Length: 75
Image (cartoon, rainbow, N blue to C red; front, side):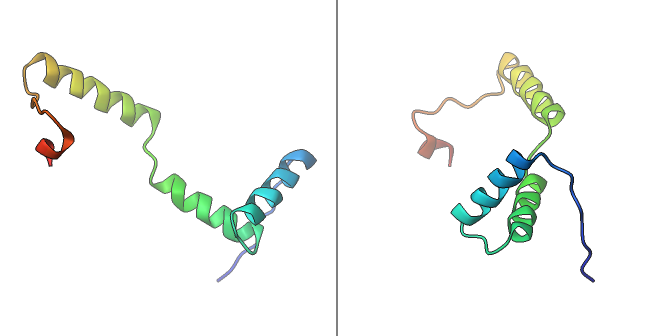
């Protein structure tokens, strides 16, 4: 079932959203917002990123890294 979501935004932001949605080929602002929401699902949080970096540093210090001449060697 479809539901309406009402947002209160400053006029300038509303204009920018409408312009961006048209420039990116969306037929409606709703479609653009749905697209942005799906993109957001694939992002990791700052906390997750920092945790990953800390883990990578630990592995590096413990010598658990792979030396490669190119990215192709890693794949």
